[in-house]
Amino acid sequence: MWTKIKWGFRILVVLIVGLFLNYTLPQHDVVQIINTYNKLTPIGANAIFYSSGDTGTGTETATSTRDIRFIDAVYPDGKTVMVYRNEDTGWVWPPYFKWDSSTLQAEAANLKSDKANPTWVSITHYGWRLEWLSTFPNAVSINQVSGPDVRIIPWASIIILTFLGLALFMLRRMWLQFRERAIDPTLAEAGEVWDSVDAKADAARAEARGFFGRVSAWFGTWRAKK
Image (cartoon, rainbow, N blue to C red; front, side, top):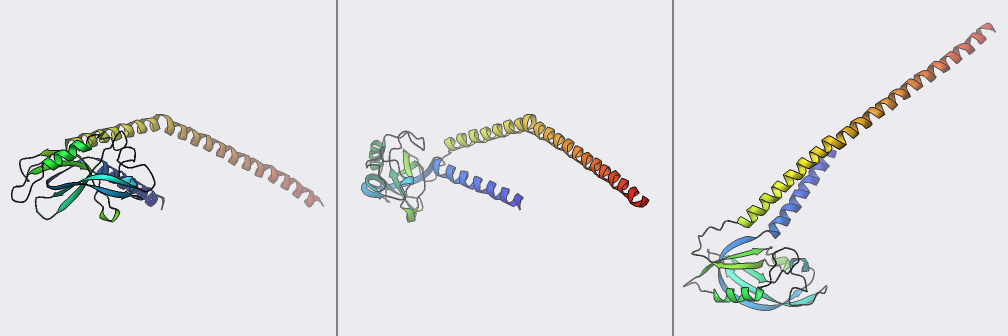
């Protein structure tokens, strides 16, 4: 039972970390921009998926309406569409330090195209598109590419994941060394002390049984004399 609980906890931690990284790390979409616009958007229970009020265009309240920039795009298959929001991140999380949403909106508008003469771009973004929560990935940068089949290597994600993997490996090594040098000897010493106490307790019980046995035998001799 305890083993199942430990494995369940580990799987839960891995799932939470994986979702966090999937939301936060930069992703790249090769798309065609078809529209750019501003829209008054109510922010309420889904505020965690938007920038904080002091970096956006609205006020930081439990429920507010902000004038948010949006970018409409379509994937190379011509059917799948995506809507990106374009908000500054400021100094808060995630640490993209984005302050140029106005400039990015102008770049996106300049790269709009139609089906007859498409212009393909790579939009770097983070976040998820969840229709039932009205959340949109946040565009971070836009770069024109040669075509819809261009391959984008996510170097930033590779570097970050490699660093996190090395950091996790080093932390585990440090923990194992600390446990080997400090915790295990302490536990072994505690076990020896406990064994010693247990042995003394056994000896005391044996001695007590011997004493009471001798007393009982002595009373037995008096009963025999009577």
